[in-house]
Amino acid sequence: MHPRVRRFLAYFLSVLVVGDAEALVPPAPPQAAAPSAAPALAAEAAKSYLEIFQAAPELHFSTADFERARAALEQGRKTCITRFQARAKDYDKQITASRNELKRRTSTLDDAARHALHCQIQNLTLLKEESQVLANDAIPTAYENRLAKVAILQNWPAEYVKTRAQIADGSYHQRRWGDIKDIGIREIATNQQDDIKTGQDAVREMKATGLMPNAIEDPAVAGYVNRVAQDVARHSDLKIPLHVTVLDSKEINAFALPGGYLFVERGLLDAADNENELAGVIAHEIAHDAARHGHQLMRKATIASIFAQAAQIAALVLTGGVAGVGTAYALQYGFYGLGLVLNLQLLGVSRDFELQADQLGIQYAWNSGYNPDGFIRFFDKMATREGYVNGVGWFRTHPPFYARMVAAQREIMMLPPRPHAVEQTSEFESMKAALKRIETEAAKQEAGRPSLLQVETGCAPPQKAEYKPGQLIENLCAAASSR
View 1: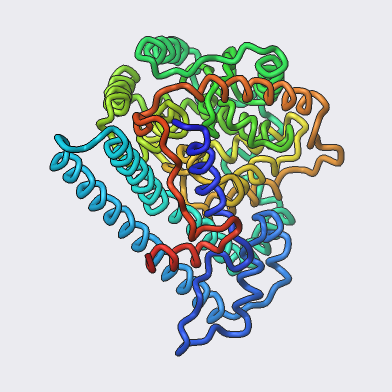
View 2 (view 1 turned 60 degrees about the vertical axis):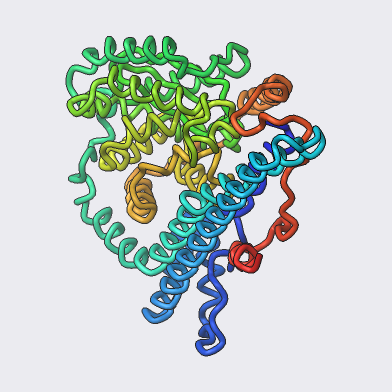
């Protein structure tokens, strides 16, 4: 795929889910002007989760204000998704018409005209895939994120009072896994060692079927990530050795296979702004292994069958047989997206496991000396700043944003404060510098790599003249419907 097209697609999708204070509140119809509280509520909902948790107890909006805000967001989501679904169908019709013209004129076309038709079909296909990813994934996630923040603004004051009361009367000690002074001694799940062979088999299967991206061996990157992960593991309930691999993939994700096999993808390292965020994500994944979530999921499907399905998906993508998100991944990475398959087929079987891993991971990060809010900060960034395509596996099977963030914030409140909690280190900065060199080399290698849709060379990227950086998402939807 041409580098300009790849950059265009990634940037276009990432900006869409950012917006500003009113980015996801559609303009009110003339006959029902928005109430005076709407701008203030929208501005609060545009802030980070941690800012909202801090501010919500002091804010005063009416029940009607919240109902209007939710109704506006729900209508905005429905309208925006419908419009991009329509755009995808329109592109599909144009593709069919162009292919029919190619067949009809195949004996009379000169090389220049044939090339122009090839480029037209290719670019229309790219735009169709783009619209599908927006409609199916990016827009729903952006709206879910904003709806969760509105819900927190409304409900957190009561939850805050309740949590403070539990801390005051000591009842918070009775919560699930409230025995934080016994981390490392307590037993979250028995027989963790029984998962080691399962994990070994899974890694072997992934490598044999071509599902595993190459490992990054640079000690400034791999060595650093391993040191952070091992330190968190020592302060966790994991009782088996931890094996850490950094994968050379742009996907923003990390995942744990049974038996202490942790994989961190390059895109996640790039997205993290400090060591605190990275440690929070790593702690979450270690928690999956400490609680033996993979083992429990294996009761429904074996590792072998899961990766056999994944291999079939990969084969279809590589031969051009899969559309939608799979093709979007191929466009982005030259690789269909490891997190997509793992989260759908393996980690996503039970959303309860994600909530459990959130709680344990926050405890492990805190016990390792980090500020326990690192995971929330990273989650918030993924939902609002980084865009959705590079991190689609992060959200696809996870619990509703509201339940997840409230549970995480309650756990953080119940942990004793650490006056000198770690946020950033010089080692993290050194890792980032080394990572830039690796990314530059990877970009050079990707430049000449074939992709599913870029089979015709020498084509200009598709033009999206109606889009401007920073444009509000509802304005983009309006532009899409007017074309």
